[in-house]
Length: 413
Image (cartoon, rainbow, N blue to C red):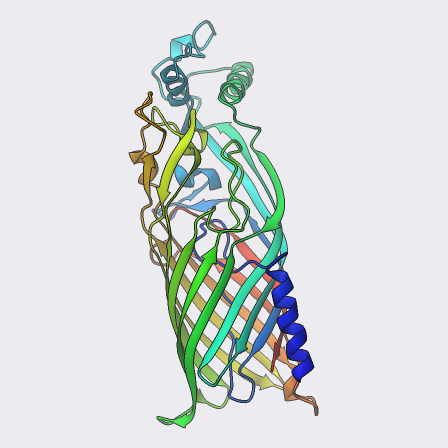
């Protein structure tokens, strides 16, 4: 047993220098949620590995409508982008073209697309004493995303050929301000999440078989892949370069043999930092801001609540679990951080107004515990199949509707 623990600890230490990075909650694109697992006094430590895939084709709006994933941050109006280019001191791109007559009119585009990811995830918790333990979660993944543009409404009476020429003009306008083609592929890591947990396990108390309760405090180290300001299809793997801290509490109760319920409550706070961003000048969509400059972004607080219900050993080690997760992120504070008082002045309030979001997920899990059927039960694994399903039940708004399927293995020791 001692050698097994040393191997796990060694793997965790070397991962800190290579592939360690966590499940995170404050990301509106991926359901990167924490593993829920049971501890016992006999086996208080755990190691979990997952192989997962994620995919999304659209996002949720606050009125239950489906929108394109990039439209989380607002709609795309080509005339607003043209006005922003004028604010940079350049000629209006419509001048001298067949579309000059449409100056000042709304030219809306829909932004559809796809988000796909594959990766490996791990979670490790090491009990140090009966009441204290340390833990980390980490994963590595590859992400591909793209944005497809389509004229939303042909209210201008354009022919098919004119629609193609207008789209060519749109691409030229985006290229002129330094934006790359909206197609992105990236492999890498996310933020490192390390925590210290204080808690206790009580057996056969208050008429319950087992109660496991604790509190934890953790730090999120921004080592993950960050969004590329010049590619509107890019997405962060974690907190987009912001350090963070969090507090959490958890409770699990075994009411009767193999009937278990619990919850996790947590709040995150990322710290503000300066970084190069796209700054909108004339109300254009923030991903396509005409001005590239330094901004100070102070992320809002994120609250997480996660209740769950689990039934173990339904038949010869087979069990099921259902979990509901709601995550609410409040407004970010965004300020122009360019040196001095440069012009033009960015229009940041519309961007700030779309930085809050709420996601809801239903997670269904089927697992098989070999310890229920093996004679040597100490190293017996638990295999699982998990499906994270985006739902719109209470308050879902401005988040990608990303589904996640994972095959997992767990060792308790």
